[in-house]
Image (cartoon, rainbow, N blue to C red):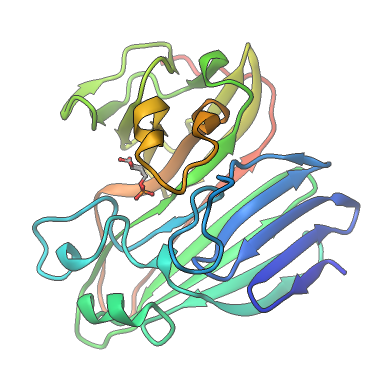
Length: 296
Ligand code: BG6
């Protein structure tokens, strides 16, 4: 069966290859596993909470309606870091296509975590579409403002934990020339390095990266992940390294930082603003490609 539903999960299996699968937890509509021809592509902490008591540490948590912690907005500032989508149980809307197997999940105030919804009393509807190709995984989001009078303002981000072999052999390419906010240094600058490499905790928000920039995660010269973005101008690159990993109870094993890098396409440099009745859509496409070095 291409799509299997349990009480807590939805599992997609590609009809041409039963070792190409995606597993989605209804809690957070979190894709927590994507195997391509038997090889796991995403990183998931062995201590990740899968019971709805905490956002999943790993896979592709969804960040909405606020990235990080907001201090200015009357309502968004009341929400916890990264908002409420990753800590709400989404409704499984069903399968919309047989091949590639494609499913949808929905979230609105009626389903969202009630404690958090009280803090951010907005009318909205989210539809997440997950498409499992024989060579790709596409996660598409549509956000609609279902209010008849209020403006809807929000951030969106796919907080993708990519599995890698060794962080010290890993580089992230094609971000050169973009302006970033370095969360470690708390300052903005233009990235002039030919690639991003990792030697310590790294937490950067790249802003307004051109849409045709195809970012690659490269292991010892070979691209192991390629990421295309649609309508997601910003991208966070994050690796917690030793100390930050130690401080996260749900991050295990503690050496796990060596085997993951987060590349997180989003719209976070400012808020997307939707008038009543308006919608916005975006997607992230994960696939494999040859080395593509895009010269600035
Ligand atoms: C990243 C942020 O997106 O998420 C980091 O840039 C943050 O600053 C990380 O530490 C993890 O956040 P959380 O809330 O899942 O621990």
